[in-house]
Image (tube, rainbow, N blue to C red):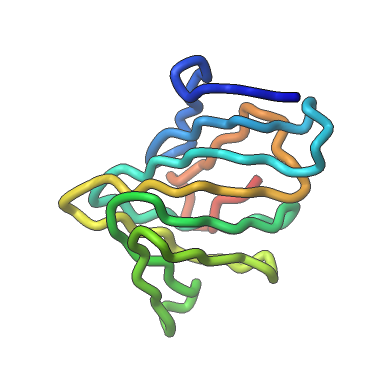
Length: 125
């Protein structure tokens, strides 16, 4: 059995916030579970070519937007979005507070992955 608390997990600075990675590849569960904090007022240009991801909002407010900007969905506690096609997207946190998500990755993350948000390209890992 694996039992972990957020207080005992070292946060990873992923680019526009912190990721508390509870389950990783080394745990042999076949997926990763993270508590993801997206800093208030940030916009992240993201894509996952190697992973599928689902995110469940547990705090704050924001939006997930298609790469071409044609569609946008509000994120608030109780809303889930899933990137089932390795979708390139924008993750936007509202200016008034951090956006908090429970993020699930398949296949699992190794652990130290970080985004490069300084590029004009969608950041991936």
